[in-house]
Length: 93
Image 1 (cartoon, rainbow, N blue to C red):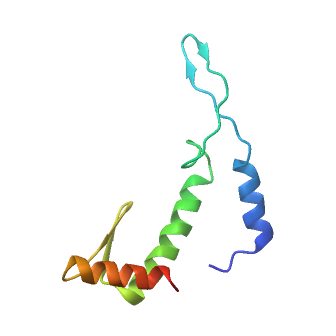
Image 2: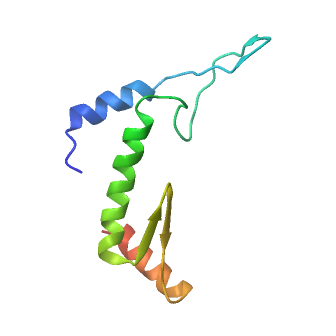
Image 3: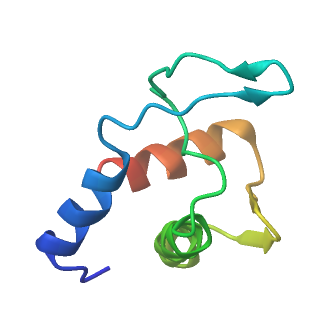
């Protein structure tokens, strides 16, 4: 996507080592590490989502028929085998 490495590093540093807590009426939980996904309610989430979806849709526009709706991406193929061949072809680029 042409994003400079320093900016990628800056965004990664926001999430690296972050320990969110769960806030309840009884108090906050201990901090815990998030290993999958993104921290909720981050101001960066919408921007990062758009960047990732744009990168994905660029790849799919070239190789496969696709449909993008809200936060879903549907890939279309005649058969399951054809879909797998095309997807693995994309992944090996």
